[in-house]
Amino acid sequence: MKTMKKIALVSLMGVPLAAGAAVLKADPAKSSVSATFKQMNVPIESKFKKYTVAIDYDAAKPDASKATVEVETASLDMGDPEYNKEVAKKEWFNSAQFPKATFVSSAIKSAGPGKLTVTGKLTIKGKATDITFPLTVKTEGGKQVFDGALPIKRLAYNIGEGEWKDTGMVADDVTIKFHVVAGQ
Amino acid sequence: MQRYTKTAMVLHWLIALMIVSAFFLGLTMVDIPGFTPTKLKYFSWHKWLGVTVLALAAVRLLWRQANRPPAPLVSIPPWQHKVADGVHYLLYFLMFAAPISGYLYGSAAGVPVVYLKLIPLPAIIGPDPELKAILKTVHYVLVMTMAGVVVCHALAALKHHFIDRDITLKRMLP
Image (cartoon, rainbow over all chains, first blue to last red; front, side, top):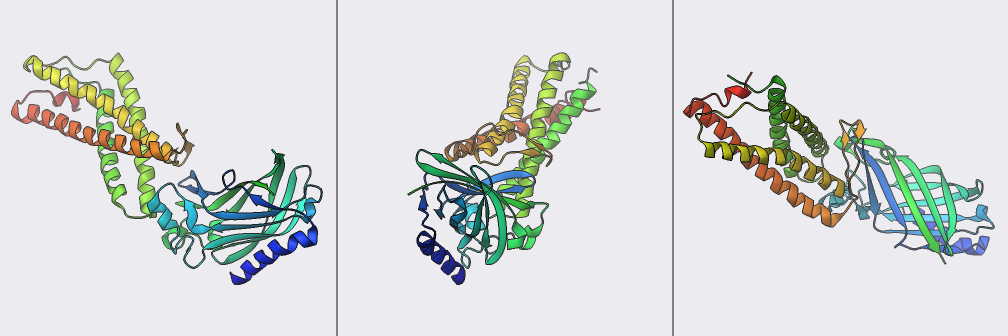
Protein backbone atom coordinates (compact mmCIF):
# COMPACT_ATOMS: atom_id res chain seq x y z
CA MET A 1 0.00 0.00 0.00
CA LYS A 2 2.79 2.38 0.84
CA THR A 3 4.40 1.98 -2.55
CA MET A 4 0.99 2.40 -4.16
CA LYS A 5 0.55 5.66 -2.37
CA LYS A 6 3.96 6.80 -3.46
CA ILE A 7 3.21 5.96 -7.04
CA ALA A 8 -0.08 7.83 -6.77
CA LEU A 9 1.65 10.81 -5.28
CA VAL A 10 4.44 10.81 -7.82
CA SER A 11 2.04 10.55 -10.72
CA LEU A 12 -0.06 13.33 -9.27
CA MET A 13 2.82 15.68 -8.72
CA GLY A 14 5.02 14.75 -11.62
CA VAL A 15 2.55 14.73 -14.44
CA PRO A 16 1.72 18.42 -14.88
CA LEU A 17 5.40 19.21 -15.32
CA ALA A 18 6.08 16.33 -17.63
CA ALA A 19 3.03 16.45 -19.87
CA GLY A 20 1.99 20.02 -19.47
CA ALA A 21 -1.63 18.89 -19.24
CA ALA A 22 -4.02 20.30 -16.70
CA VAL A 23 -4.81 18.52 -13.46
CA LEU A 24 -8.55 18.51 -13.12
CA LYS A 25 -10.31 18.26 -9.80
CA ALA A 26 -13.50 16.33 -9.43
CA ASP A 27 -16.58 18.14 -8.20
CA PRO A 28 -17.87 15.79 -5.48
CA ALA A 29 -21.41 17.21 -5.62
CA LYS A 30 -21.78 16.22 -9.27
CA SER A 31 -19.59 13.15 -9.41
CA SER A 32 -20.23 9.64 -8.22
CA VAL A 33 -18.36 6.39 -7.83
CA SER A 34 -20.46 3.31 -7.25
CA ALA A 35 -20.31 -0.46 -7.13
CA THR A 36 -23.16 -2.57 -8.48
CA PHE A 37 -23.32 -6.14 -7.30
CA LYS A 38 -25.96 -8.77 -7.85
CA GLN A 39 -27.46 -10.47 -4.84
CA MET A 40 -29.69 -13.38 -5.85
CA ASN A 41 -29.78 -11.67 -9.24
CA VAL A 42 -30.97 -8.42 -7.72
CA PRO A 43 -28.73 -5.60 -8.91
CA ILE A 44 -27.88 -3.23 -6.09
CA GLU A 45 -25.97 -0.04 -6.76
CA SER A 46 -24.16 1.45 -3.78
CA LYS A 47 -22.25 4.68 -3.85
CA PHE A 48 -18.91 5.47 -2.26
CA LYS A 49 -19.28 8.59 -0.17
CA LYS A 50 -15.58 9.44 0.07
CA TYR A 51 -13.13 9.34 -2.77
CA THR A 52 -10.68 11.55 -4.57
CA VAL A 53 -10.17 11.71 -8.28
CA ALA A 54 -7.32 13.50 -9.99
CA ILE A 55 -7.41 13.53 -13.74
CA ASP A 56 -4.77 15.04 -15.88
CA TYR A 57 -6.48 15.59 -19.18
CA ASP A 58 -5.92 17.76 -22.18
CA ALA A 59 -8.44 17.28 -24.99
CA ALA A 60 -5.72 18.20 -27.48
CA LYS A 61 -3.38 15.54 -26.16
CA PRO A 62 -5.55 12.76 -24.78
CA ASP A 63 -2.72 10.23 -24.90
CA ALA A 64 -0.79 12.24 -22.34
CA SER A 65 -3.59 11.90 -19.81
CA LYS A 66 -3.22 10.40 -16.39
CA ALA A 67 -5.75 9.48 -13.77
CA THR A 68 -5.61 8.55 -10.12
CA VAL A 69 -8.59 7.47 -8.10
CA GLU A 70 -8.62 6.76 -4.38
CA VAL A 71 -11.73 5.40 -2.78
CA GLU A 72 -12.33 5.04 0.93
CA THR A 73 -13.68 1.53 1.11
CA ALA A 74 -15.49 2.07 4.40
CA SER A 75 -17.55 4.84 2.80
CA LEU A 76 -19.69 2.52 0.69
CA ASP A 77 -23.30 3.44 1.38
CA MET A 78 -25.53 0.39 1.25
CA GLY A 79 -28.52 2.43 2.36
CA ASP A 80 -28.50 1.06 5.89
CA PRO A 81 -26.09 2.03 8.69
CA GLU A 82 -25.92 -1.56 9.91
CA TYR A 83 -24.97 -2.88 6.46
CA ASN A 84 -22.44 -0.09 5.97
CA LYS A 85 -20.61 -1.31 9.06
CA GLU A 86 -20.60 -4.88 7.78
CA VAL A 87 -19.04 -3.96 4.48
CA ALA A 88 -15.99 -2.46 6.22
CA LYS A 89 -15.39 -5.75 8.07
CA LYS A 90 -12.73 -8.32 7.36
CA GLU A 91 -14.79 -10.54 5.05
CA TRP A 92 -15.55 -7.64 2.71
CA PHE A 93 -13.23 -4.66 2.35
CA ASN A 94 -11.26 -5.11 5.58
CA SER A 95 -11.13 -1.33 5.74
CA ALA A 96 -9.12 -1.30 8.98
CA GLN A 97 -6.19 -2.86 7.18
CA PHE A 98 -6.95 -1.64 3.64
CA PRO A 99 -8.68 1.72 4.01
CA LYS A 100 -8.31 2.68 0.37
CA ALA A 101 -8.89 1.14 -3.00
CA THR A 102 -6.84 2.82 -5.68
CA PHE A 103 -6.61 3.05 -9.40
CA VAL A 104 -3.54 4.53 -11.06
CA SER A 105 -3.47 4.76 -14.82
CA SER A 106 -0.44 3.64 -16.74
CA ALA A 107 -1.67 4.50 -20.22
CA ILE A 108 -4.62 6.37 -21.65
CA LYS A 109 -5.20 6.10 -25.37
CA SER A 110 -7.62 7.91 -27.60
CA ALA A 111 -10.19 5.52 -29.05
CA GLY A 112 -12.14 7.87 -31.30
CA PRO A 113 -13.92 11.15 -30.58
CA GLY A 114 -14.89 11.41 -26.93
CA LYS A 115 -13.59 7.93 -26.21
CA LEU A 116 -10.57 6.80 -24.30
CA THR A 117 -9.13 3.44 -23.42
CA VAL A 118 -7.67 3.45 -19.96
CA THR A 119 -5.12 0.96 -18.68
CA GLY A 120 -3.79 0.91 -15.18
CA LYS A 121 -3.44 -0.79 -11.87
CA LEU A 122 -6.44 -1.38 -9.69
CA THR A 123 -5.68 -2.20 -6.07
CA ILE A 124 -8.39 -3.39 -3.74
CA LYS A 125 -7.80 -5.06 -0.41
CA GLY A 126 -4.09 -5.23 -1.12
CA LYS A 127 -4.51 -7.11 -4.39
CA ALA A 128 -3.27 -5.29 -7.45
CA THR A 129 -4.33 -6.20 -10.98
CA ASP A 130 -3.81 -4.60 -14.36
CA ILE A 131 -7.05 -3.60 -16.01
CA THR A 132 -8.25 -1.89 -19.15
CA PHE A 133 -11.61 -0.25 -19.59
CA PRO A 134 -13.33 2.24 -21.89
CA LEU A 135 -14.00 5.79 -20.76
CA THR A 136 -16.05 8.48 -22.43
CA VAL A 137 -15.37 12.16 -22.08
CA LYS A 138 -17.39 15.20 -23.02
CA THR A 139 -17.35 18.88 -22.20
CA GLU A 140 -20.31 20.31 -20.33
CA GLY A 141 -20.46 23.86 -19.03
CA GLY A 142 -16.70 24.31 -19.19
CA LYS A 143 -16.10 21.09 -17.27
CA GLN A 144 -14.98 17.70 -18.41
CA VAL A 145 -17.39 14.87 -17.77
CA PHE A 146 -15.95 11.39 -17.63
CA ASP A 147 -18.13 8.29 -17.59
CA GLY A 148 -16.94 4.76 -17.30
CA ALA A 149 -17.93 1.32 -16.15
CA LEU A 150 -15.45 -1.26 -15.17
CA PRO A 151 -16.44 -4.87 -14.61
CA ILE A 152 -14.41 -6.71 -12.01
CA LYS A 153 -14.53 -10.10 -10.31
CA ARG A 154 -14.89 -9.53 -6.59
CA LEU A 155 -13.25 -12.84 -5.62
CA ALA A 156 -10.05 -11.83 -7.42
CA TYR A 157 -9.71 -9.24 -4.65
CA ASN A 158 -10.95 -11.49 -1.83
CA ILE A 159 -14.04 -9.35 -1.43
CA GLY A 160 -16.53 -11.54 0.37
CA GLU A 161 -14.63 -14.22 2.22
CA GLY A 162 -15.85 -17.28 4.08
CA GLU A 163 -19.49 -18.05 3.49
CA TRP A 164 -19.70 -15.08 1.11
CA LYS A 165 -17.53 -16.90 -1.42
CA ASP A 166 -20.72 -18.53 -2.64
CA THR A 167 -21.40 -16.74 -5.91
CA GLY A 168 -24.93 -18.15 -5.93
CA MET A 169 -25.74 -15.56 -3.27
CA VAL A 170 -23.63 -12.64 -4.39
CA ALA A 171 -22.36 -12.87 -7.96
CA ASP A 172 -18.65 -12.69 -8.68
CA ASP A 173 -19.24 -9.96 -11.25
CA VAL A 174 -19.29 -6.47 -9.85
CA THR A 175 -19.46 -3.31 -11.92
CA ILE A 176 -17.70 -0.21 -10.74
CA LYS A 177 -19.25 2.86 -12.30
CA PHE A 178 -18.02 6.35 -12.20
CA HIS A 179 -19.28 9.66 -13.35
CA VAL A 180 -16.75 12.38 -12.79
CA VAL A 181 -17.39 16.03 -13.41
CA ALA A 182 -14.03 17.76 -13.22
CA GLY A 183 -12.67 21.21 -13.83
CA GLN A 184 -9.70 23.29 -12.86
CA MET B 1 -74.38 -28.23 1.76
CA GLN B 2 -73.25 -25.39 -0.46
CA ARG B 3 -69.46 -25.22 -0.45
CA TYR B 4 -66.98 -22.78 -1.83
CA THR B 5 -65.76 -23.72 -5.32
CA LYS B 6 -62.66 -25.91 -5.56
CA THR B 7 -60.76 -22.96 -7.04
CA ALA B 8 -61.79 -20.71 -4.15
CA MET B 9 -60.64 -23.39 -1.66
CA VAL B 10 -57.27 -23.83 -3.34
CA LEU B 11 -56.73 -20.07 -3.46
CA HIS B 12 -57.82 -19.66 0.17
CA TRP B 13 -55.51 -22.31 1.62
CA LEU B 14 -52.59 -21.54 -0.65
CA ILE B 15 -52.72 -17.85 0.19
CA ALA B 16 -53.18 -18.68 3.89
CA LEU B 17 -50.08 -20.88 3.85
CA MET B 18 -48.05 -18.22 2.06
CA ILE B 19 -49.18 -15.41 4.36
CA VAL B 20 -48.23 -17.41 7.45
CA SER B 21 -44.87 -18.39 5.91
CA ALA B 22 -44.08 -14.83 4.81
CA PHE B 23 -45.05 -13.53 8.26
CA PHE B 24 -42.74 -15.83 10.21
CA LEU B 25 -39.98 -15.58 7.63
CA GLY B 26 -40.25 -11.80 7.93
CA LEU B 27 -40.00 -11.89 11.72
CA THR B 28 -37.03 -14.28 11.52
CA MET B 29 -35.06 -12.41 8.87
CA VAL B 30 -35.20 -9.00 10.53
CA ASP B 31 -33.87 -10.56 13.76
CA ILE B 32 -30.73 -11.91 12.07
CA PRO B 33 -27.99 -9.51 13.15
CA GLY B 34 -25.63 -7.94 10.66
CA PHE B 35 -25.35 -9.16 7.15
CA THR B 36 -25.34 -12.87 6.33
CA PRO B 37 -26.10 -14.94 3.23
CA THR B 38 -29.01 -16.53 5.10
CA LYS B 39 -30.46 -13.12 5.83
CA LEU B 40 -30.27 -12.06 2.19
CA LYS B 41 -31.78 -15.36 1.09
CA TYR B 42 -34.69 -14.98 3.51
CA PHE B 43 -35.32 -11.44 2.32
CA SER B 44 -35.56 -12.67 -1.27
CA TRP B 45 -37.86 -15.55 -0.32
CA HIS B 46 -40.02 -13.22 1.74
CA LYS B 47 -40.38 -10.89 -1.23
CA TRP B 48 -41.20 -13.72 -3.61
CA LEU B 49 -43.89 -14.93 -1.22
CA GLY B 50 -45.31 -11.42 -0.97
CA VAL B 51 -45.43 -10.93 -4.72
CA THR B 52 -47.09 -14.34 -5.13
CA VAL B 53 -49.70 -13.51 -2.48
CA LEU B 54 -50.43 -10.25 -4.30
CA ALA B 55 -50.87 -11.99 -7.66
CA LEU B 56 -53.02 -14.78 -6.18
CA ALA B 57 -55.12 -12.22 -4.27
CA ALA B 58 -55.91 -10.52 -7.58
CA VAL B 59 -56.93 -13.85 -9.14
CA ARG B 60 -58.97 -14.67 -6.06
CA LEU B 61 -60.82 -11.35 -6.10
CA LEU B 62 -61.72 -11.82 -9.78
CA TRP B 63 -62.83 -15.38 -9.12
CA ARG B 64 -64.99 -14.20 -6.23
CA GLN B 65 -66.73 -11.66 -8.46
CA ALA B 66 -67.63 -14.38 -10.99
CA ASN B 67 -68.31 -17.15 -8.44
CA ARG B 68 -70.12 -15.79 -5.40
CA PRO B 69 -69.41 -17.44 -2.02
CA PRO B 70 -72.12 -19.66 -0.45
CA ALA B 71 -75.10 -17.83 1.07
CA PRO B 72 -74.85 -17.02 4.81
CA LEU B 73 -76.13 -19.69 7.20
CA VAL B 74 -79.60 -18.85 8.54
CA SER B 75 -78.61 -20.17 11.97
CA ILE B 76 -76.17 -17.32 12.43
CA PRO B 77 -77.48 -13.96 13.71
CA PRO B 78 -77.32 -11.07 11.18
CA TRP B 79 -74.91 -9.01 13.33
CA GLN B 80 -72.39 -11.82 13.11
CA HIS B 81 -72.75 -11.83 9.33
CA LYS B 82 -71.97 -8.13 9.36
CA VAL B 83 -68.88 -8.69 11.51
CA ALA B 84 -67.75 -11.59 9.31
CA ASP B 85 -68.27 -9.45 6.19
CA GLY B 86 -66.22 -6.66 7.73
CA VAL B 87 -63.40 -9.07 8.58
CA HIS B 88 -63.45 -10.49 5.05
CA TYR B 89 -63.28 -7.00 3.51
CA LEU B 90 -60.39 -6.18 5.82
CA LEU B 91 -58.58 -9.40 4.90
CA TYR B 92 -58.94 -8.68 1.19
CA PHE B 93 -57.72 -5.14 1.74
CA LEU B 94 -54.69 -6.41 3.69
CA MET B 95 -53.93 -9.15 1.15
CA PHE B 96 -53.22 -6.30 -1.27
CA ALA B 97 -52.00 -3.57 1.07
CA ALA B 98 -49.44 -5.66 3.00
CA PRO B 99 -47.49 -6.92 -0.05
CA ILE B 100 -47.80 -3.59 -1.87
CA SER B 101 -46.38 -1.71 1.14
CA GLY B 102 -43.53 -4.21 1.35
CA TYR B 103 -42.87 -3.90 -2.36
CA LEU B 104 -42.71 -0.11 -2.15
CA TYR B 105 -40.51 -0.37 0.95
CA GLY B 106 -38.07 -2.52 -1.04
CA SER B 107 -38.17 -0.03 -3.92
CA ALA B 108 -37.47 2.89 -1.58
CA ALA B 109 -34.61 0.90 -0.02
CA GLY B 110 -33.09 0.49 -3.49
CA VAL B 111 -33.46 -3.29 -3.46
CA PRO B 112 -35.87 -4.26 -6.23
CA VAL B 113 -37.45 -7.70 -6.58
CA VAL B 114 -36.14 -10.24 -9.07
CA TYR B 115 -38.94 -12.77 -8.88
CA LEU B 116 -37.61 -16.32 -8.38
CA LYS B 117 -34.18 -14.97 -9.40
CA LEU B 118 -35.54 -14.79 -12.95
CA ILE B 119 -37.92 -11.92 -13.55
CA PRO B 120 -36.83 -8.40 -12.61
CA LEU B 121 -39.88 -6.49 -11.40
CA PRO B 122 -39.99 -2.73 -11.77
CA ALA B 123 -39.03 -0.49 -8.86
CA ILE B 124 -42.06 1.77 -8.55
CA ILE B 125 -40.19 4.43 -6.65
CA GLY B 126 -36.50 5.26 -6.57
CA PRO B 127 -34.26 4.95 -3.52
CA ASP B 128 -35.50 7.39 -0.90
CA PRO B 129 -34.30 7.12 2.73
CA GLU B 130 -37.15 9.18 4.18
CA LEU B 131 -39.86 7.30 2.34
CA LYS B 132 -38.09 4.06 3.22
CA ALA B 133 -38.48 4.78 6.95
CA ILE B 134 -42.16 5.64 6.53
CA LEU B 135 -42.90 2.58 4.39
CA LYS B 136 -41.10 0.35 6.86
CA THR B 137 -43.55 1.47 9.56
CA VAL B 138 -46.52 1.22 7.20
CA HIS B 139 -45.55 -2.33 6.21
CA TYR B 140 -45.04 -3.33 9.85
CA VAL B 141 -48.37 -1.89 11.00
CA LEU B 142 -50.28 -3.47 8.10
CA VAL B 143 -48.63 -6.85 8.65
CA MET B 144 -49.27 -6.83 12.40
CA THR B 145 -52.88 -5.77 11.79
CA MET B 146 -53.16 -8.62 9.34
CA ALA B 147 -51.78 -11.07 11.90
CA GLY B 148 -54.43 -9.94 14.38
CA VAL B 149 -57.27 -10.14 11.85
CA VAL B 150 -56.12 -13.56 10.59
CA VAL B 151 -56.11 -14.90 14.16
CA CYS B 152 -59.67 -13.56 14.73
CA HIS B 153 -60.78 -15.08 11.41
CA ALA B 154 -59.29 -18.48 12.30
CA LEU B 155 -60.66 -18.44 15.86
CA ALA B 156 -64.14 -17.57 14.54
CA ALA B 157 -63.97 -20.47 12.07
CA LEU B 158 -62.93 -22.85 14.85
CA LYS B 159 -65.66 -21.52 17.12
CA HIS B 160 -68.25 -22.25 14.43
CA HIS B 161 -66.84 -25.71 13.90
CA PHE B 162 -66.29 -26.88 17.48
CA ILE B 163 -68.71 -24.82 19.56
CA ASP B 164 -71.62 -23.98 17.26
CA ARG B 165 -71.01 -27.22 15.34
CA ASP B 166 -72.25 -25.63 12.10
CA ILE B 167 -70.92 -26.06 8.55
CA THR B 168 -69.15 -22.69 8.24
CA LEU B 169 -65.64 -24.21 8.18
CA LYS B 170 -66.67 -27.37 6.30
CA ARG B 171 -67.71 -25.23 3.34
CA MET B 172 -64.05 -24.25 2.91
CA LEU B 173 -62.79 -27.84 3.30
CA PRO B 174 -62.67 -30.32 0.42
